[in-house]
Every structure is written in structure tokens, then in C-alpha cells.
Length: 243
Figure (spheres, rainbow, N blue to C red):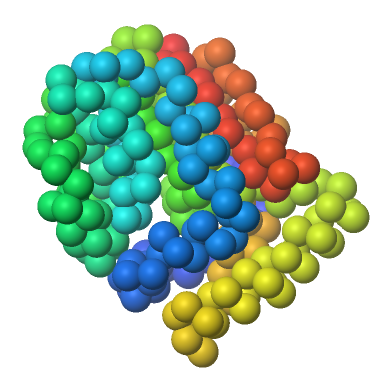
């Protein structure tokens, strides 16, 4: 466990998280578009702004592939984009989307794999991206970040999006009200009465503040670390380069 996380509450185990996302997979994209207020693609495109044709890109905890498909279009037919996720249900949904998209391997592929298991053999990437997934890995974040660094080519980088609970008490109250209230209603409508209303806000509360995650990136051996906040600090995009 990383040093900063010792003061945080432990979250659900990986079996629970895997089962939850397996159940969410068929309607997950609808859910993310609703809670992102139509801005989710804009932020994902920001994370991918540096991708060039021919690049090798890894999407960590790719879900149904929303970020992965955008990366594949930017990397083009000469690129190689891989999406990995703990949830077989999410990967199956992404593979169904791929079959309908016309984007064939090796330009785009998906695998069931844990973030903690990186690096993967000799495969190395120009960029590793992730959208709203690091909170689910926070208890092992130092292991994950070191694996990301070792999975990059020299000079390669990361672009990581995630929720960040605001520090200011008024913004924090509004943030929690949104997730416990409106997002909870969306979840119940899409996934039924068993939707875990507290999961999203609790996972953000357990996760690092922006400056703490910057320190975690430094510990893992990254340099040129930048962070950009969106929605009054409720979402943060972190960029860093392998040292």
C-alpha cells in the first residue's frame, strides 16, 4: 500500500468491483454521458491531444472502450492501441463495439488484465491513458504507477483523468450532493435498485487530492508533471513523462 493511503478507508475488494462493472457494462456509456453532462468526450480528447499516427497507446481500465476508440482513430492504421480492464463484461462490450466499428487488430485490441500486472512482457507504449479508473486502484497505486512507468518507451508519457473531491468546503458539499443525489437517480434508473449510490463519491473521497497524486507520480519516477482541473476541480487531468 502506498504511504499516503494509510489514512484512507479501504474500499471494496476487486471481486466486488469486477462484479459491479460486469453488471454495468451494457449501459455504462449512457451512464457516463449523463454524469459527464455531455463533456466526457471533450475531456477524453484533451487527454489524447498528443497522440500521433503510428503511436502505441495503452488504455488502462478501459471499460467499454470510449477512450480506446478515440485513441485508435488518432493513432491510425499504423498505430497499436490496447485496452485492458479487470472486468470481462466491459471487455466483451468493447469487443462488440469493435466488431461494429470496422477498426481491426492489430491497430486496436482488448484484453482482460489488471493494472497491477503491468508491465506486460516486452510491450512498451508511447502513451498510457486512463479515464476515471485510478480511484479503483488506489490501494495499490504505487505498484500500478511503477508498472505504468516501466511500460513506457524512454520519453513516453501518461495522461490520466480522474475525479477529485474538491478541497473547498462549499464546492465539496455541492460535489457530494451531485453524486449522492442526481447521479444516484441516474444509477437507479439505468441499473436498478441495487445500484451502489455511495460507490462513486466514496471512491473519490478515499482517493488522493490533486497535490497528493502529483507526489505519487513523483515517487513512481515521473517528471514534467502537470495537472489541469475541470468543473471547479471535480475532475483532474494529470500529464507526466517517464524519467
